[in-house]
Length: 357
Image (spheres, rainbow, N blue to C red):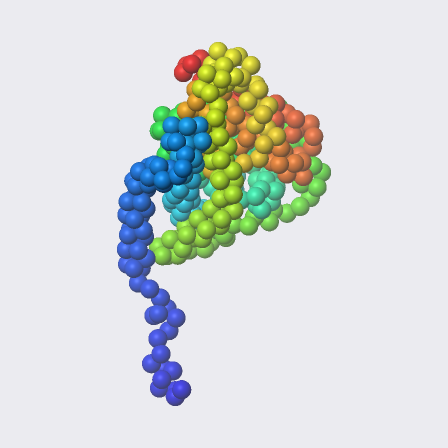
């Protein structure tokens, strides 16, 4: 190739697709998403009707639930994660620490819980992010408000609740979930538990987690690519949990009598709320995996407060999360954390059952 050919060859920047192609392609993909989503119900009914199973039978009910909910949840999750991946491209661990640093308790708890909904909180950054918060001078209680809200009141849980059981339940879940995060963090801060951190926590420098540096500036198409990458990563990581959750939900929907569910998890059974929390703590699931179970429980007559208490305990107090926290907190602080958050969830469960029972 001659020097003139090299000079005429387009640069990598010139070969990049126009931003308008990215925006137009994204708009077309969203239009296709809505078109497919509207056809999921009739498609599921059509496929179920072609099977050698009576539609009104228990197995037919379970199959129809599974065939409809599987694409529905996966499509909702993909859309939500893509949108929040774009939003997350404006945030970073460093920006979050800088925003919360120096905030006093009270207002700091409110801001930290609110940031917990939007800020990327991947498992690989949990420990360094916690350490970074402590070393940045952020009060321990404010840090806990963030750590409680991030897994429990995250955008995936809210988006799927909105799509599957309605905006009223999603809004109530948001309000009470944030209330638990704010009140629990404030109480932990008031008790002065800093000396119950693991000794090595104060000796390490914060690494800033695995998230993108704060100073990175992205173009519109790059933010869209961030959303696509986030969607691929998260959906690829949790789709098995989603199928497992939908399978459990389908079994409940098809085979568990509504009368039995009302007796076991109804508002009249006072012990159902603590039992649901006790059942949820040993479990491990993402929000996407547990919400199909929540949908099936509510369809079968389980009380709203009992069902949401179960969901909150799975997301905020799961045993794997407690094991991870053991790396940075001493046993007494973990026990206090579980007791305070568990009491808040218990109160929410009872309150919801009284209001909506």
